[in-house]
Length: 566
Image (cartoon, rainbow, N blue to C red):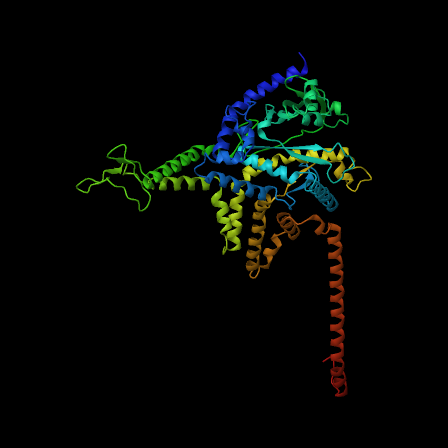
């Protein structure tokens, strides 16, 4: 049995494991995420090869027809925007760089400035127009919030090794294409990506290294749009190691093949795990995450049913079913119309509503309760409270931000955890392209080169957590200002330098704006010397002035015959 047969068996096992999640994904899309990918429209399941009907119509419009209440939809949209602004906002350095070893020495001023130099370079690459990071990372975040799992695929720009603006391309991978593989500890160790490519697309992507059938289809104008299924398998290589420079001995092995013909189109590898996987919440060690609405599907379905029934009741109340005296009589309900013969000799109508006990507002209270519970569970009330925060004191605003960080914090940690793979992948690609060589502007100091370097999160959500330290400092300063008026010795309890360091970190002051310890020591020494000189000068002037004032008095005493020593 060949390697492709082995991989197809493993792929089938991954498909079977994912079946448990696919029914949930279809429910999430149906009730809360009508704007997700077309493959979720497949009637018989995500893994079925059909499902192309969604390409003939706008998928979101078709799915929205099944929605009678959009509360969960717009709450999740708002949550996506809010979480994005708190974790990875554009135009903001949402992470830093630091030593990975917790026992590493404290970075010096030069180390901090170098870390900021590397960080700034990474953000320039990501947000250049060619890299595609902003758009594809947004899609990854949407998938994380709405389906529980989001995937970003950073790939090296192998076509132009001299392109310093875009050495890395970032691509979002739809969840329905991915079959993730984890080890016993829940770590990502491999994946299978199943996707359909048109014949001409496959021939272009794999440089004609495809089966003869695909080649023939690609050359035929009538068959070039025929679709074929391709599998990208990535798994840990036996005997591979992370610090290898030979791709054949890299940590991860990669194989692309055609599922039907088993033709291998490309073989290669990755020195780092190539995917950036973020999960909203995780069910144990499952490869896939759970979205925020997972525990609320009962309420969401109940809300849809109640709103639908309310619409039916309203229609029955406005346009009820009518019973008439004779079946052949037609009733004209247009305003001002005359219906002859539809009353009897006593003036009683020969028609009436078949149901006259309809109450369209009977479920309004229950509907509003469900909407309110969704607003609370999906953090809608928190965003709204922050938007309506005009008139609050600074303390109240800080307390509200701290509450927001406590609520969103656990889930933002899961999202940001995937960025460690992103950082490792980027640094690996740049390092292999010589970005950290001796002659490079990014050449590291000796201490940095000898230690492990990793990502340190500095997103707004982290600053909101650290704001508590700064608030504590400010509160204690107010206490000292009052207490020191009666007992100045309390000022000796606080280390001013450590207090300043903590305040600088809490506020996120860039390292380049902070003076080094040597410069601070020199400034303090110069200031002390100037103060000492000024004090000596003042003492000399005082003595001179005293001597000048004492001279006339001494002369007068001498002329009057007084005894100076008496």
